[in-house]
Amino acid sequence: MIAFVSGRVAQVGLSSVVLEVGGVGLELNCTPGTLASLREGASATLPTSMVVREESLTLFGFADEDEKSTFELLQTASGVGPKLAQAMLAVHGPDDLRRAVLHEDVRTLTQVPGIGQKGAQRIILELKDRIGPPTGGAATGLVAAPSEPAWRGQVRDGLVGLGWSAKEADKAIDAVEPEAGMPAGEAPDVGALLRAALRALSRA
Image 1 (tube, helix red, strand yellow):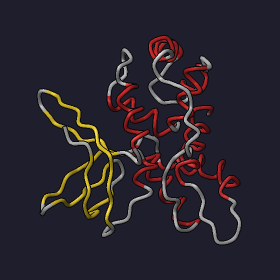
Image 2: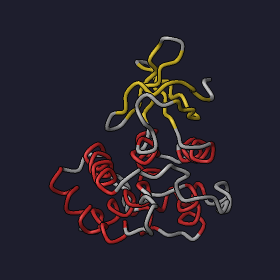
Image 3: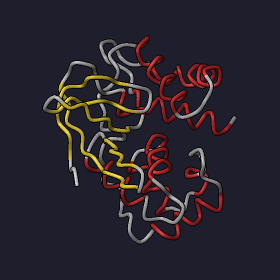
Image 4: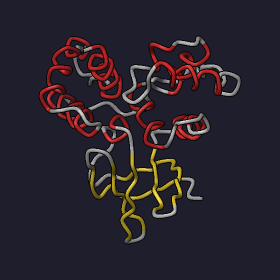
C-alpha cells in the first residue's frame, strides 16, 4: 500500500498529475479541485489510495487525508467504484457528502453524474451508520487559484475532464461567475466554483 506520494509536480493534466519521485514519474488520478491546487515545478505531497485490478494498478491522489478516507469509504457501498467515488468528491466535499447521507438528502447525491435516485438511496442505506458526522473542516482543503482568468480555465478543464463539452462548461462557468467575486487581493475558491458549476449542469 502506498500511503502518500511526495515529489516534484512534473505535469498536471485534465484528470491526473505526474509526480517525479526518485527519477520515476508516478501518475495519480485526482479530482479537478485537487489538480487546481498543483503547479508544475512545485513540490507536492498527496495522500494516495491504490486500486488493484487484474489488468492494472491505479493510484488516486487527494487534497488531504479526509478526502482519501471518504473516497475509500464510499467504495464500500454497492455499485460505487473508484471512478464514481472520485466523481462524488469532485462535486461535493467530504462534509457535504456526510451531511447528504446523514440527512438522507437524495437530491444532493443525484447531482453527481452517474448517480440516480435508486443509487442515492442505496448509498444512504449502506453508509448512514458508518460515514460519521461532518468534521467542520474546510469544504475543499485546496489552495485557491491565483487569479480570475486562471480560475475560469481550471474550472473549464475540470468540467471537460469529467465529460462535459466545452460549450456546456462555458455556460456553467458563466452561471457561477458571480460567486467568484472576492475582496481585493484574494483569489476565488476553484474547488467550490467547480462544484457549483457541476450542480448548475445537473439542473440543466
